[in-house]
Image 1 (cartoon, rainbow, N blue to C red):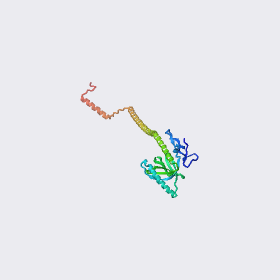
Image 2: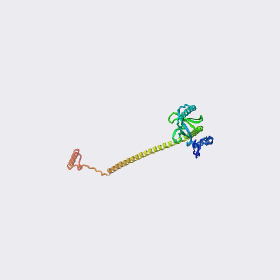
Image 3: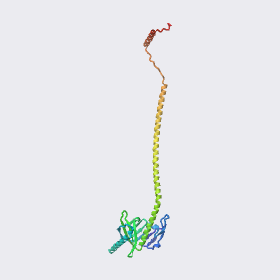
Image 4: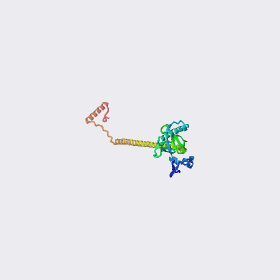
Length: 292
């Protein structure tokens, strides 16, 4: 594992490596973890990842630009360098101090901050940087880059003056881009797996939801079955009660004594009836038993 180091153009203290060494003295073999193709880096990979590579510079200034294509980058930068150097010279003539800054590089962003207070002046993600270059002009080493401002389409050119390290700054930025690109490729390769895991988790959630819905339906059916069973039991009991009442009524009717009541006529009425019958018999000429 690479040792974390703090890089500074001013020199090296304990645990630091000076950036004013020759590049070949600081070459490291590095690469992104995971078996990606290795190449020679200017700095340890860990230092770039942790944002520990920085350079002491003077910020000559910045100005808005409009770059339609990368082919225009060199011309635009030269014009910016010429303009900003002239303005810096005029400021020096007036007694103004050119601000000293720290230029920090990582595989995620570039950061320009005040050397003493460490206040961040500019922060640019790598994917916002469209062009960078180094040049030697009148004995001064210049590093410049063009970046798009976050959230807008505006482009700005930043120009820094550095002692004999402009080319190394450009190479360091190239290393940061290379490292970021390799990480992008690795992330792209693992994306399908992540998507599959995400889809499976989604299916698991849906399955759990469907399971809960089925359990609710089963519970509802069980409640309905229980209610129907109670209703059927009640009806069955009512039928049995009706049957019992019908049978008991029949038994009671069968067991009751049968009495035939014939009304008895009065004695006078009976005598009259007998006499009437006798008279009729006489009229018919039916002989009496004594006569026969």
